[in-house]
Every structure is written in C-alpha cells, then in structure tokens.
Length: 298
Image 1: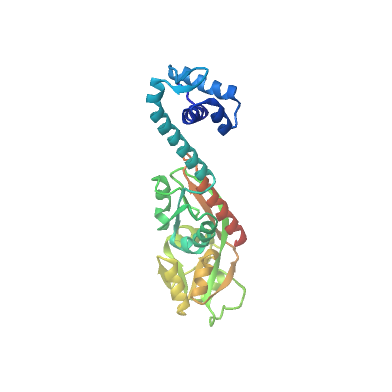
Image 2: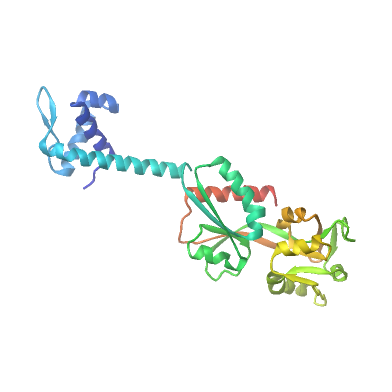
C-alpha cells in the first residue's frame, strides 16, 4: 500500500467541506485533480470513501470509519515533516562534543557561545574528559565527535586535522626570558622546567632527541595537568612548556609566551568521529563554526 500525504489531505478536505468545490479551492487544485487524488486513495485502500450523487457528496460507511484514522495518520505525518524540517533548519537538534579539559575551556567554550547565539534551540552537550579517554567517548557513541591533539587511533576513527598549535615556553613577567620573543630548546636547559608528563615523555622528548641527540632536559617539575604547570610557572617556580592553545589560561596566570625554536615543534589538533555514523545537520554546523573559530584564532 502506497498512501501519500497529498491523498490524505485531499480526502480530509472533501470530508470537511462535504464536497469537492470548496475542498479544491482550499487546496488550490482543480476539481478534476482533487477527484483523481481521492480516486487513487480509494484504489490503494480498497473501498469507496464517498457516496456521490448529482446533489451531494457524503462519506460512505467505511469512509466514515476510516476518517479518524486518516486524521491521525495525517497529523503524525505532518508532525514528522515539521520535525524533519526543524532538524534541517537547526530549529531543533542535539550536539554532543568532547574535548580534553584545556581545549574544552580555551577552544570549545567560545565556539559553543557563538553557536548558541545563532541556534538557541539546539541542545548542546560538552563532555570534558581526560586526554587518554577522549577517543573512547567517540567509539562508545557517547558523543558525536571529539576535538583534541593527535593521538594513536586504534579505533580507526575518522581524523580530520583542524589546526596546528606550536609549542612555546611560558614564564612570568619577571623571568629573564620574558620579552625575549623566542628561545631555543638548548637554552632552556639553564632554567627550571615544568612539563606535562603524559605528553612530554612519550611524544615530545623523542622528537627533541631526534633533532638534538645530545640535548638533556631535566624537568624540575612534572605535573599531570596543564593548569598545574601554569600555576607553578605563575608562582615563579620555572618555565612551563605547553602548546599555544593554552594562551587564554596562561594569560590568567600572568604568563608571557616565548616561541620555541631549534626545532620548532607543534601539536596537530583534530576532530575525531566514527565513520559509520553520519553527523546531524546540527552537529555538522557546529563543526563549521569550530573551523571558523580555529581559523580566526590559529
């Protein structure tokens, strides 16, 4: 059975007006086109909907019994169409984004603010998590996508590069490096260093040793979280090594940025999502806004 929305609308209009003339005027159809729609519906359901005479059109007995069901079907279909339209036009929907703590507050927070301003009816959910748990949130389906540094992707997720964030040294205003603009990794050896253990030992240090085999960096402080490292540097306990995307937080701790060269290293920030799940219009638009913000503030 292949009943269309137009056929149901035609049947309900004729039943409401008790004839084809007013029903055709309401639907902006010719009477012959309206009659054809009703006839096609009768063919589909297998019985006559109206008893027609030269003077009047009245619901047949099965037509009267079918009328409540037809109204319910029509209302449900219209509701489904409106819902689909709302999803497509971002009048409703949901976006579930995941990011490690620092990127959640420095990158995603302003993206969410801009997105919500333009699409206030879309429900937004932010999952701030540990870096090592980020991809699992995507694999399990808890979030639509994750935004974070380049990671070993055993889950075979789709990874789309977003931007690169250079590593920099961050120190407070009274430090001898303050105002120098840039420094080399070798020159950092003379200052107490503050590093994030999870990233430094497994990823950053091998890159440095590859470029400078004789380079010896002995951190004075090893912390698990960037905010802890920034706090130590802000207290004058050393120079913290962190990517540029920490800048909003570093400023809150009164820290200055010193570019790191010889070599210049960076972290690539990417979007991770499952290849077997299509993004909703709301989520796809969120990624567009995310890309815009990342481009404006590289």
